[in-house]
Length: 132
Image (cartoon, rainbow, N blue to C red; front, side):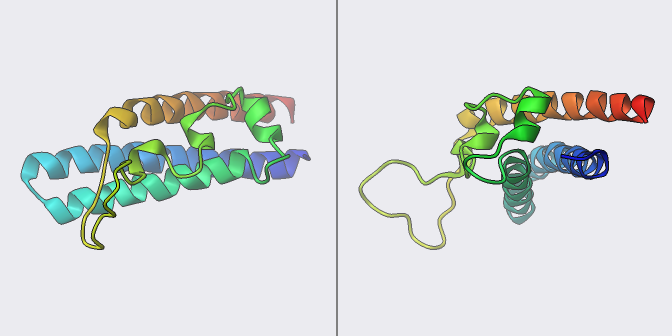
């Protein structure tokens, strides 16, 4: 991957990491304020941004250059497709269309992965700026 492309991808990774962390903060604020719609919209934004991060790190099943360069492990919550916390619960009865599921226990590992990725991307971007 060339310098220009790598910088563009790193910039997008930094933007998406910030978006995930802001969405989390907004969801916490919405929960405290009792604003259910805002809470779920913030979590949806968090999920979409996390999925986009995964797509940038692993564009195909065989391609993982950015993930390796940034030190993101294969078992990262960002590499599991839809983050674990947003998958339907494992039960026999399907959820109705209007029901929403969120496993709060899975969120800390996702946020930790995003925070670490944000740090690594920031460090790599600073390195690229020095080199060029």
